[in-house]
Amino acid sequence: MIRNNLWVLIPMTMLLTACDPNKIFGTRVTPPKEQPKPVEYQLFSPTVAIAGGAPAKAVKVASAGEKKYAGCASCHGADGEGGVGPKLQGQSLSYIQGRLTAYKNREKVGRQSVMMWSQASLLSDADINDLSDYISGSF
Ligand code: HEC
Image (cartoon, rainbow, N blue to C red; front, side):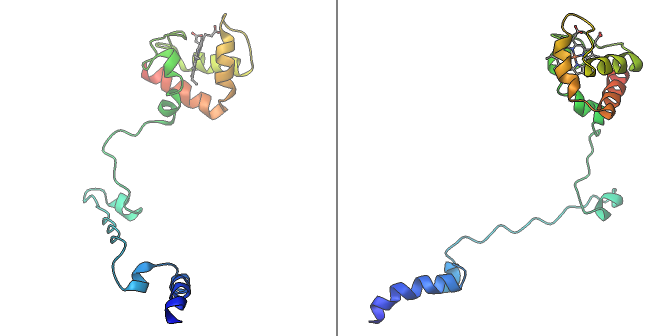
């Protein structure tokens, strides 16, 4: 009788103990979880420690425009040297802004404007400003 009931009792107990075999058998069936690592604070960046201990970045933080340019680099080159798309090096802020706005409005600039229409349609005014700022200031 007890033997038969055992097969009911064990799953029942597992249910009651939220299926933790460690509790039922009193043993360590599952390996202990890795202890969370203590947050390392950097002594010379107290503001970061106060803000919650996010690791302080020693590297230069990429500007908004630089991040957004990542999608343009495949056609215009990492340094705006050109490729599928024309060279952007040496262009002024207002020139780039003007071009991007024109493409956003589906205006024809060169023979391949269609390629830029889809690109520019995804850009907000803030994106256009960030990108123009980055391109004219960096290349
Ligand atoms: C698929 C390739 C491709 C991608 C990606 C692309 N472009 Fe272009 N871009 C072109 C081509 C091709 C032209 C030339 C269009 C024309 O004939 O009017 C162009 C033209 C331009 C121009 C005008 C250049 C000039 O001399 O008048 C600017 C500014 C520009 N792109 C910026 C960007 C920016 C910023 C991005 C990223 C958001 C981007 N492009 C992404 C292909 C691309």
